Image 1 (cartoon, rainbow, N blue to C red):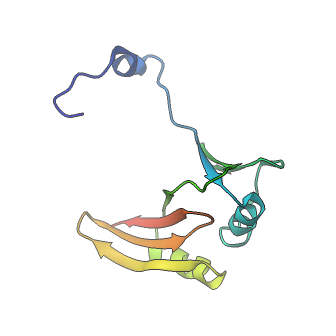
Image 2: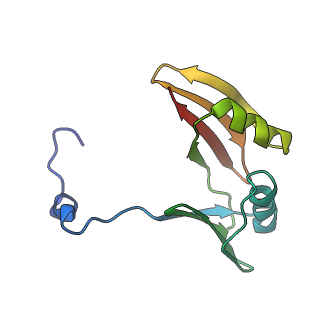
Image 3: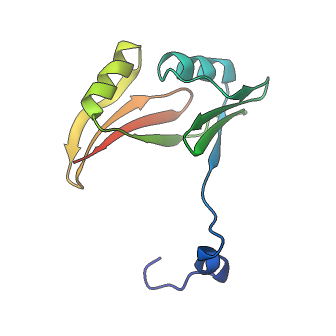
Length: 126
């Protein structure tokens, strides 16, 4: 928003800052998506029922909801060693979209096929 004034509710957040803490993404096959995160990413849902699953990552939660269509989104994970972490998930069955490569903006990044229409990104600062 360069050159634009922020709305008052955003610029006044220093006294009571809001922080992003979760995102909802839709998948048609919830059970398959849960299995993918459990097997490939080796994380279990904190909560799940027939219509949703919640995966917590530090102070951020990924909520997968059953939907009529898959949400197309990229979920990025920061890594201290992109190649190592990429190799681990590929050995567990993750499908490579792009192998680790250095990018001109100063990161090393790999992209993997996630459940539904999700892309999983592993990014390492250089």
